[in-house]
Amino acid sequence: MSLSQALASAAAGLRVTQSGMAILASNVANADTPGYTRKTSTQVTTGGSGSGIGVRVESINRQLDIYLQRQLRTETSGASYADLRAQFYDRLQSVYGAPGSASALTTIFDNFVGAVQALTVSPDSAAQRSAVLSSAQVLAQQLNSMTQDIQGLRSDAELGLADATARANEAMKQIADINRQLAGAPRNDATTASLLDNRDRYIDQLSQLMDITVVPGDSNQVTVFTGSGIQLAGLQASQIKFDAKGAIGANSQWSEDPAQRSVGTLTLVSPTGGGLDLIADGAIRSGEIAAYLEMRDKVLVEAQAQLDQIASALASALSDKSIAGTPVTSGAQAGFDLDVGSLAAGNAVHITYTDASGAQRKLTLMRVDDPAALPLDNSATADPNDRVIGLDFSGGIGAVADQLNAVLGTTGLQFSNPSGTTLRVLDDGNGNNVTIRAASATVTETSLTGGSAELPLFMDGNASYTGAITAGGSQSTGFAGRISVNASLLLDPSRLTVFSTSSPTENANSTRADFIYDRLTNAALSFSPDAGIGTTTAPFTGSLQSYLRQAVSQQGNAAASAASLQEGQGMVLASLQQRFDETSGVNVDVELANLLNLQNAYAANARVMTTVRDMIDTLLKM
Image (cartoon, rainbow, N blue to C red; front, top):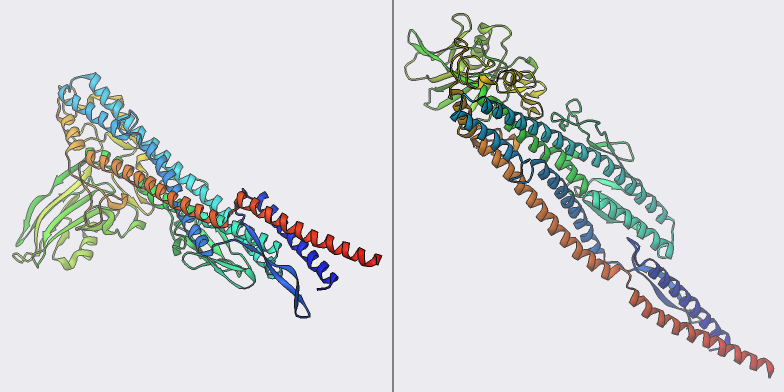
């Protein structure tokens, strides 16, 4: 090897060593930088005329386990989803109150029941009547407050979706920008490595928001899809649009129909302009966005529905009055007469009959004052075995009978209006082919002095609660936020124990108090499965007290499950993060050990150059 070759080799070695020291310095400086991966260099020999005479840096490499990185992003999405759900469930638990505390819903309900029970013992006590009404007001106000809190949580979820959407759009834009920069960059230099780190950081941010899949392409580029396969970013970025709503109430629901939707939806707009509703498509299944959607549109909606079920049962259990039909015959036909003049919207007639096959059938004939709500679905009642028919009463009882004959003519039942407000139902008169077993009507008692134990203790603001159904939904929706104690009863508490109009000065007795106590604790009520308790085929049936405890228990169990999932996901994520850091993170001790090697190499190459210089000087002096 000539002296010039030796000098070139030493100079090349110095340049490689300097490059290595620059990489090492960058590693140490960024040891705590989020998303930074440890860099190393690949060295290759250079040759001249077939002889290896030097060395150069071929590429700057990132120390990265692609498989581990993919796992980490999947678990990051799951952990973000679990963490956010746990936070919301924890806040929801505080709405219900700590079990046994004075502010817990169960405690307040028990206080009301206890006051009523005390009134059954002392019906002539003015103080006890006041105690009942006071505890009823506290219960109504608690339901009002809980409704506000739950809708506040839904509003927080709506705002959270708006923020998450903005962050997702920024991440997708940055990913696309870096992809385009990589298209014209050298494949494996320091700039490329830095761009890849930055892109991974944005992909990681996106994985916190939703479940994603990253597909590598040419020139270090990638394409990012949702977990369900919808493209989000490549060389161009899609954009998620979210039409956030300013105010959310119990009636605010998501729907695929924009005319019926009263909360924001997520629309993915592709670079070519095409639009896709991500919620309708079920495209996002994990991450913060999925958690926000689940809480806003399912968990909190069910929590509100449970409160509404409790409020509705409180009102209707005390005010609903059953009126039995009067048996009647007409020739060979037999059936019942029912006075339906006092039916309000939401009240219904109930008919049980045996059809020609011997099977028992049940009909619920419900008054509906909003024609736009017709026809009704069978889910309008909690009973899975009845057939629900909505009736327009605006044309009179004769028109009601005509509607029923048109709908039920093939069943063998015949309806008519013999006089006034009487609705008559008869069988077909053919022996045992069709037999009407029972008929009754359920009406809402609106008076405090109707002479019966039923009373409108709880109201929907200033109106009676009847369970009316309109095109906008059921009166029960959001009722927990509107329930109040009857103002007339507050003005005259004696009506809790004196209720006959014929004897306004009669002595107080426990009849009405006994009725209220029995309805609160023993009456078998059916509750809609829409609130998440019970199923369509087997709805929850039991006392109001038992339903309340079931609702509180369910929320507690759900919160505990959410906390357990959060803990489990956190442990998995922490374990993967540790493994990833061990592979891709910077270990300062290792870097310092490498520094010693680089120092030795630098000194050796410098020594070679010094020796060559000395030899050249000697030759020149000869």
